[in-house]
Length: 284
Ligand code: ZN
Image (cartoon, rainbow, N blue to C red; front, top):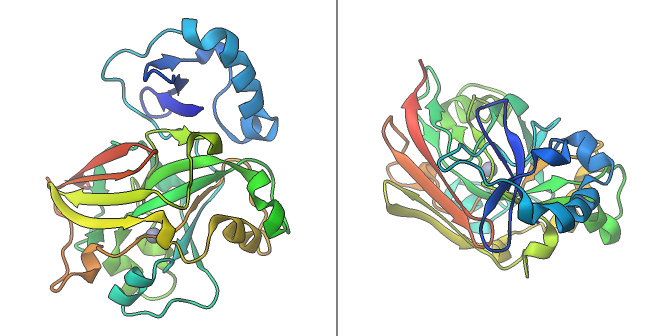
């Protein structure tokens, strides 16, 4: 299944993308895609419901905004330096264990919402990433059983304000948490929608110019390991978003560095997970 949510911020209706590409409103299912939905086997219940009702569900009006495909999660956990070529461009070594950091859940937004360059920010940067969503409460999970805890996959842009992240002391979270810094979607794909999550092309352009071009096969720490690893330090809740790291080609890595300014348009995609686009605007 491909799950979407459409409508104005905070008022999104749940929907599905059908195999023929039609996008239908499944408000009649009467549940939003959130922690409770996932914790109560919502994906199975939705699939069952959809078999009978999806075809006859009403289409969304053309041009409706995509919200993030799940309601705001309890946390967004990111993996840093998970591609060898990105670690090198950042002047850092591949870590012996995953580097993890948080993004504030208030940074969460729709896939095509404007990117707001924060006040005082002049080093706002892009990062195309494969994200996955947790499907059930995960604590001390064994790697061999880790995929049982997965709800699905989605496209994420892990926006970063490098000045806040690297020049302002302390943890990276300051430069990762601004409003609009976590556009997710357009849809959440359940695992059966992808033939091989470890072989998906991923790319990003700025104003039409290629910046990032890689493949999920280059992920250093793979998803089952990451679920198990994270669950040794925290309980992952249904709906939590884990972003697996970005490849080579972020603005920081260019000489001289290239950062976003109002009016710039960022487009990105991952094979099988759709595309998204954000226009940079200055914070009001
Ligand atoms: Zn990242």
